[in-house]
Image (tube, rainbow, N blue to C red; front, side, top):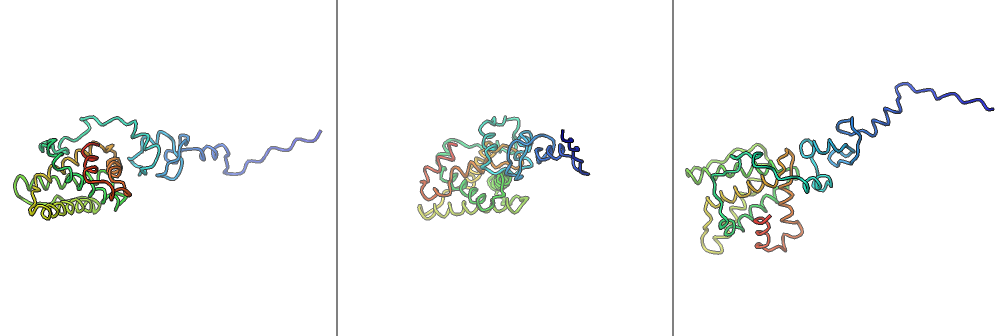
Length: 241
């Protein structure tokens, strides 16, 4: 009988079981077993970290299948979750207004799309901050006649607000050219902005890095379709999500 070979001598500082466990552990918590690939960290993570950190600490790309799946099954936020002051409930918006000014709503929505496509780091909070600041400014203008621009926290928010203001300017110029005068009142702009604020809060998940509202707007204005969609079709997409 041949002699039994000696057992392998363990190498200093090497633990095969620990090494294998480390290779299979989540890149975020390093405790639970990884089970899915996360494009935000370019590695594999566990389902719990995926659910807890999604759009909180993770910049989830819109095409992530786990993000898309979560949106399909996510329950709408309850009224208690919203800051009532942030919704400008004192501003009344009738169905007649949304019908008569659907082209204005379409134009302002497209301005947000342009801002978001120009800066892919923009998220829902940035757009909502820009819209809210502009709503405050227009409300002050309508109620007291004072023009005062609400300060914005970042250049990204300022750029989004600038796109919206530019669209309002073009809208007035288009009315002037077509009818010889512009009947767009500052109160109409205020209502349109507040409409988008409420739409944004309703579409966003509310998480710090959410882009659900932006993705909704992108879906209404596909890049390859903007030259084909009629104003009436695009306007209806915004009015009836």
